[in-house]
Length: 445
Image (cartoon, rainbow, N blue to C red; front, side, top):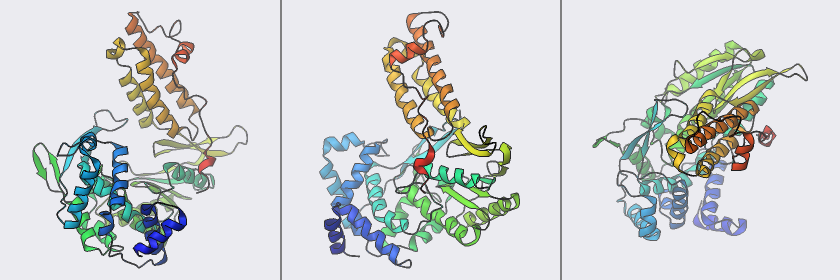
């Protein structure tokens, strides 16, 4: 790999220099499975790589870190100077990551439960995104088809389509596995050991260790990080994929005889032909992730029988269960939004139609509802979601009727007589009914 080769790729392929660099790194890693890269740190400090990283961080917005500096603050002060300062600190070796700011957000569809996130400073997020741009093509060359999460040209729907096709081909026993606190408990030593299989650049490894050990700021106290990856950071999904690659490798060597592994980051299912295979699959998964300091959640992991709709499982937000076709009489796997997904969208609709918004024009509530419902529907429209979509449409109508009644001082909900379906349509309410799409768009993988 050289700067000249990357430049030639950029000229020949008509792509920008960052994309050309990534292509060269990917090709080098793909051609030599044993190669360890020793000159990566300097690529992170390149101005074009940092500019690309800044674009990604800015697009994602996000809250400030412990320093309180926001995206808008940096834009007002000057992005160029901000990136130049980061580059200078990286080249001089004086860059040090700040502790993560601990925040707790509600878990979707789980009232009263919170998820802990660590928010890096904006500057740290830019450096993390730059490092991800350099490291991702190297590890992408090693990743196997069983992994779908946070990878280029792969999505949750590709994983879901693999599940559908596999079950319909006869593998009707499923290991529904949940890795307990994956992002919080991954062993740092085990993760770095996986990274060192491909990276021997000492400065890059020091940079990664610095992020892992940066600590967490909460309640005025900085706590050391003994395990886990900085969840909420740009590089966290890549680090999780690198660590869990050991499971893909173990499956390629010893698990294919048991069934089909479908993994999206730390969310996975194994589809088998028999119950015995599913139980052995559980043992193999548990033993493999144990080397990373991880374990399966005892209450959320189980073996289920899908045959003739006996049982189902939740994967990537969808409930999966076999249903009998009234046309052919055969049983096929179908999917629709699971209970947590339904509870989550209902909660968002309810929050946007609270009575305190009665003083505002109804169009304000409709605009907010349309935004969240359209985004939710764009994900869940690939499947058998028509009945669930109809329920959400009715719930939107109901909530808007309650809000309109409060706004105009009317008693009751005026559900049928006044604020009905036609009234909602005139307001411009986005409707999910009729938006279902076939899954064939994702059937090629």
